[in-house]
Length: 361
Length: 194
Image 1 (cartoon, helix red, strand yellow):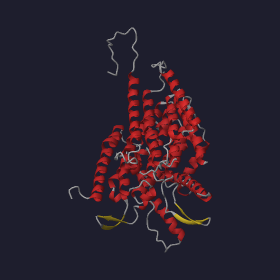
Image 2: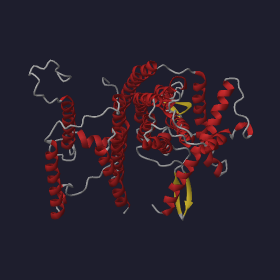
Image 3: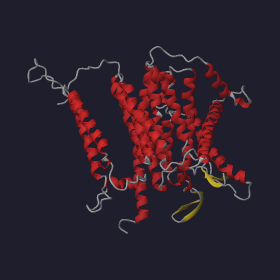
Image 4: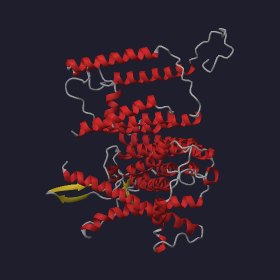
């Protein structure tokens, strides 16, 4: 661990920090454009080519707006809540590998640089921890605003987060069982090559989604619920509780909530890709292409796969109506959690049979 | 050096959070203080390379327990004035006695330098994070000669006993009603405990 290593870590952190903000700018534009297309409208088209700078304009506007503070707020927590939303959102993406590790000679030493913030040995649990910390922002914002609608939003957020966290955690256990690691880079590495099914090599990539499809479905539903997106956006629900937890926020504080929401969408999509769709793995044609191109290609594959998920998020929002509260709870507790438990039981049995043979054999 | 700086910073955070839990007038701030303390402890675990314990600490305590606290606080409502008369008049003197005992004990430790009482003598245990090792250390029961296998079994069980005692104590405190003089022994409203 010398100064070059420290510098590299700092550089990666700064790069991810910038990347997430650029992604947010593009993602909001992407969502508005796609929803507009689906609703037969034009969408933003004034700022920049195809309106791509619309989010920059909106951000600047929010930056200069007055930050109205209602009289009945608990000021300390009211101020802390948007920060508590943004910080875990940035931290959560730090463990997602979004490119193949690069070997560079720096300071007279060959260094293997992972293209991810930190390669933790408990990466998957870290993600769960950060996503559970992110709930505080909504809860505290709702409570500290000192008004009815935000409080309702906050209470809804707590209940929803606790319910769907369980389903999400259970849906990840088969992945851990299957790959035998909580380290995200190892989970990606275990999905390279071709799929073997009962000794048959199939012409499919060895992605977890082909083996653990039920886990993938449960994870994706829970991820949409965890990010409070439609059709699970009861936390905000404009028609019922006027925006919920962020009703009393304006200006830059509101922008921080918005930023956190879109970063969380990106992170959850990145996680789905990492855990089930092989992460950055894809053809790189090493040797035939210039070095730089085959070093960048994995990141391109990762971003392409993530874009598919982002499109699905937007698609869900444009097509599905919001769930009723009892339907939300029924889906979480009576469908997803039992389904993931049954599937976990099945996978565990299959793994045991593969390792020890049939109990009567 | 780095460890010392982290220890000083996080120790300050942990203490400040703990004081906040006790001193805060508003239970929501109390819960936030508790969260700060738990986070500082998680950082200590990271410094000791026990990543697994650190992350589980954040998931279980910060993620689940304090969220539930906040949920309950929101439902019960924090605006209601709390009844601040003490139900257990002995607890302050007892706390003082325990505090004096702890200070004396800590002072004796520092003066005599017998730190092998608190830190297991010999090789310090290497804390690694794999799930198998943690499970083996905590709950696997080997033969009595195999000291490695069930090394932490007794502390683990003692901790669970402590948790049960705490839960029973909380229930007992919640249902504790001091009997007033003018009430007849046959109370018409036995309260929620019976």
